[in-house]
Length: 258
Ligand SMILES: NC(=O)c1ccc[n+]([C@@H]2O[C@H](COP(=O)([O-])OP(=O)(O)OC[C@H]3O[C@@H](n4cnc5c(N)ncnc54)[C@H](OP(=O)(O)O)[C@@H]3O)[C@@H](O)[C@H]2O)c1
Image (tube, rainbow, N blue to C red; front, side):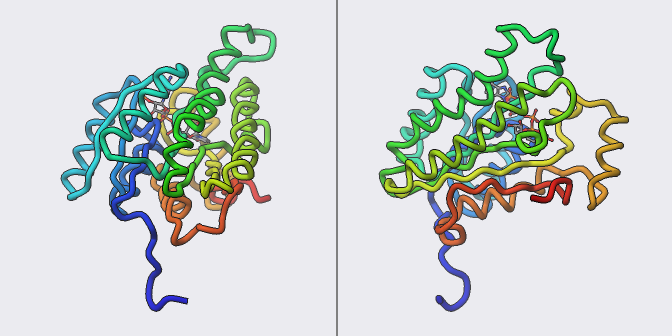
């Protein structure tokens, strides 16, 4: 056992955070950079959000840049990973955070276009990014941190069936990849947020629904994006979580205990 803190294995290493332009991803990007990582902040439509994250990191003395890509498209994802490696000289941590419910749609109204939209964004994107990043992560050992959801366990609320199922895919894929990539020295884990106060729920939940949820959470509050950030840090840091892989860590104020 070393004296004092172990080497966290973060300093100078490179992280790519998808959906780093706002919400949970923006907080993850800031915390990873504050811990000494060099961070590629990915955005899709909220470029000004990603710029603000990059500016904040640089103002604090850190190193960051941004890349824009539509993670539903394989070619975009491949370019995003290639640009990260080119800009920073490697990639050690991939955070697959970009995602959305896309819409609250009851089963009667689900059509093929909606199925494609939900699974392309939340499931296919994670497959593409994992495939593109693996050779780089495997080079010196690395970590993938996926973002699942409490709804992967409890099925979500009415109208979120496909989103919830796509996040169940993310959880299962996390475990599969943990087994498959362990020989390459790549750890694969996931964070599963409960109900977080971000644009996500502003768009897909009413104030009344959020208040009802807040009341059943033992800690009596919704999550703040910063509430996930420490778990991202822990899972990224080989010096802390080097023997942890294939785990889905629930971060939800006690909303779901498993
Ligand atoms: N909020 C919650 O309660 C909650 C609970 C469980 C799980 N989650 C999951 O946590 C993750 C982050 O959620 P959040 O609450 O922070 O959501 P958010 O504030 O709505 O942010 C969503 C992020 O995903 C990106 N994104 C959306 N569509 C994209 C596309 N086609 N290509 C590339 N990027 C795209 C957005 O990029 P741009 O803005 O740049 O377009 C944005 O950065 C998601 O995977 C979500 O499913 C959230």
